[in-house]
Image (cartoon, rainbow, N blue to C red; front, side, top):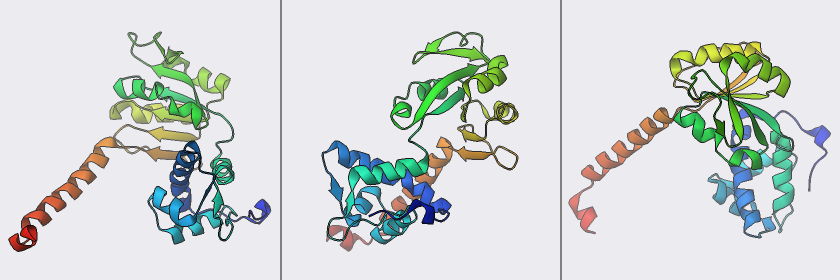
Length: 227
């Protein structure tokens, strides 16, 4: 059952951050031909507690049906609609080095509501190349591209030293959502949203946990290992 959308309240940021995980799990279930799922099963698939999942989904006005659970396709649509994925969002990728090249070739953008319409780089050896059917354009075209193609999201895959300058130009061109892969913190004005993806930081966090596991293993008494 779904509550009246007009009765919905603001959704907490923490809940928004988990919605893509729920959508991923639902998409996997749908591909396996599963039409309904309990909150416990969906929570396990998404890696959260069932109570947290039910609370998160209640912010969408979705409560499921007792004894039946959630309709997979309906809940996936509700989450997609809440995330704004029922329409195509024009995306520009700036910086076509190895990472930018890989991002431009990522087929998952199209199936998740995003359309890469522009690729930009300052390297004359890269400009003019076609990646996934899109021509790489010079940085001088950034403002025109943003205006003509209506860029909604800018992806920065440049070195850290040039990321802020690229960000400033995107913002000045009217782009209000930025995904930053450069290893630096960007300064943006109020009203601009930035999400940072730092691969080296994630590896460092994994290294921390790996080190703790290794230390714990060395402290384990021999009799417990034998047991």
